[in-house]
Image 1 (cartoon, rainbow, N blue to C red):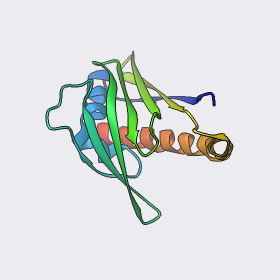
Image 2: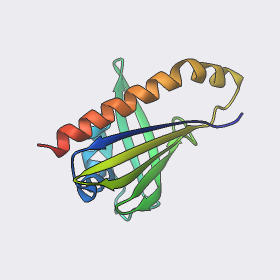
Image 3: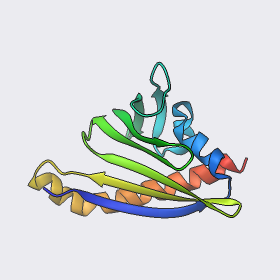
Length: 146
């Protein structure tokens, strides 16, 4: 199956270095990543290659996701691949200076493992990824403008 990707863009009224510092700090992920309850960061934070365990709460269920940082280029790009749960699913953030604000572009790439997964993805993935990005952007704005 071919990969399915979605790209969303928005603006946050904060300097690019503050936005990058926030999204790359695993201990602060619960502040901005929708549904994230806690994070167990890598023992040593080095950027690319770090593995973090993220714990989500959805519909009363606790979901454990492991990610590996695959793109780390301060202060412009940050991305990860999911190792456990939706293996191979990738999320990337590109930051651009825009006056006193930062333009954030999020790209989510998902490779369905079969026809059933692909069909379900056609119905649910687009809505879910848009809701995720919208919530993420609102959370970033709230945290960065305190």
